[in-house]
Length: 325
Ligand SMILES: CC(C)(COP(=O)(O)OP(=O)(O)OC[C@H]1O[C@@H](n2cnc3c(N)ncnc32)[C@H](O)[C@@H]1OP(=O)(O)O)[C@@H](O)C(=O)NCCC(=O)NCCS
View 1 (cartoon, rainbow, N blue to C red):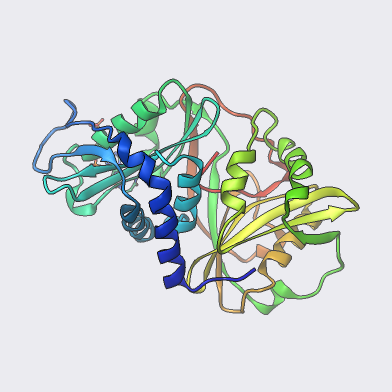
View 2: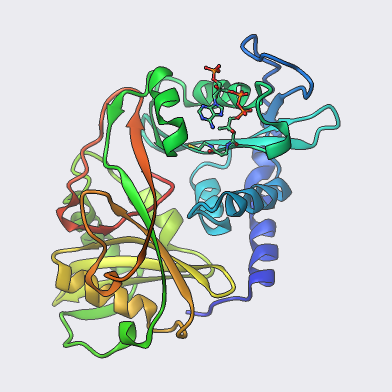
């Protein structure tokens, strides 16, 4: 898989986001300042986000030190072109962001609630939140809360717990790429693998059809997705993408057992040079995959649901698909 340069990747993403968002701009759903706002020194008119504003959001995600990147934003907009909301100031410039992503029937994932640091504490976050919840409608809404906000989310009614996720980063050593006895056969994901891959995904998410989600995250520029096969049976899968120069994100490593997961991960890392950094999230109830035993532990986010918990069976889930259900 060709890994495009960071600069080129961003301009290509901006162009594809432009196409995706055109229909959204017609929607032009506006929310005015909410009664809950305490001070109004910056008016927070909520409107649909524009393609070029997605890149601006990307820079703030990076500034927060979160795991997400333009790759995730692009996948989220592929899933739901209407998901990006922007709080705009009097000059129509973004001062905050939020996303409500329709990712399955009656399931919405909320992400990227961010207010620019200089505009915080003025009711803008509350306004975006109100618009995000309104966009979620009657769906079961899911979020992964940072520690500081968890109690606040619970007070908003997000009381159903889920599988918490812990972030890790690790600079790549040569040892990661050492040869191991093949546990199975690895192939780049192709159309023929999908039915079998979804069978394995159902072992983790028994009540949720995630095919649209995985197609948005696993197919596209700058992402490498591998499938592990035992004969014709899919026994593992996972993906890696470039976040920015030298930084890569691992997503959704699912496997029959730890040996297969390890083999998939080594395959995903095989094109990276030593010194690259990999980040990923693991269900907090588990330790990181074997080949990442020296990874540096980061933040734990708390998964909360508005209506009911969606079952996630973590036995076969080794690395999570951060930033979505
Ligand atoms: C969280 C954030 C979006 C809030 O935006 P804001 O415009 O400052 O928020 P508001 O002034 O509208 O306050 C909204 C509510 O959030 C609460 N709140 C804001 N920042 C908070 C914090 N750091 N910890 C706990 N509660 C907080 C306020 O007390 C307020 O509660 P109330 O409406 O019940 O009175 C903003 O601080 C931010 O961008 N933080 C960094 C990104 C982040 O952590 N986002 C949440 C990801 S899960």
